Length: 74
Image (cartoon, rainbow, N blue to C red; front, side, top):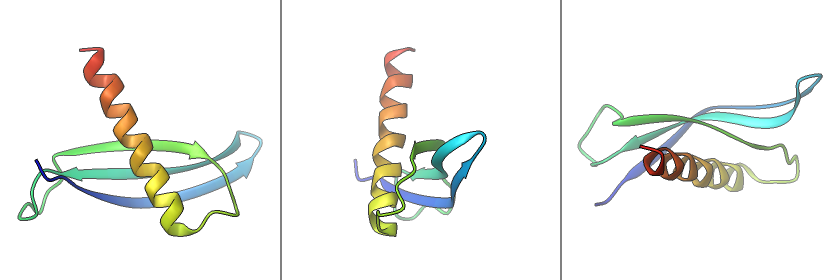
């Protein structure tokens, strides 16, 4: 199955609550779908040296990890 991922609302923060980058990762099962099949909220460590494309890929990888863990716990 060919899946498509879209990363939205990327928010880096460095404050009294910690240092992280959070985002919403939408998962689409087909190219034709206008609506996401799943939405995962992902969090990765903050790294100011990473490019935007690197951050997006790390967030997608984290979202995949969250999905795998969720499925394993069902």
